Image (spheres, rainbow, N blue to C red):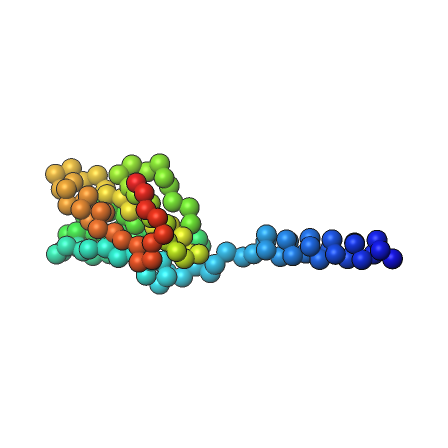
Length: 128
């Protein structure tokens, strides 16, 4: 009889682990992705939607039709990307916001300033 109680307890423990291990990721919400950060938009610039996938979104800041900076909102930022920084949020999704400056030649200082102006609304840590 004792082995049945132990087996039942083990089955409960395995079931508890399996139920959290297979937990579904948060539902993607473009509004939550946009709400995760702020960016200073100079005169003539606007925030545009870029790639939108099931688990992330990329936005672009375009000034007079020219892309100056990019912003990623998701859970797997590319920490190897040049001219970028990653900020960790306090939310489950998106847990990371990454901002980078596009290479734009003669207007590089403006692109760098736009990328540097990106801020996470509820930040835990920032590096880069």
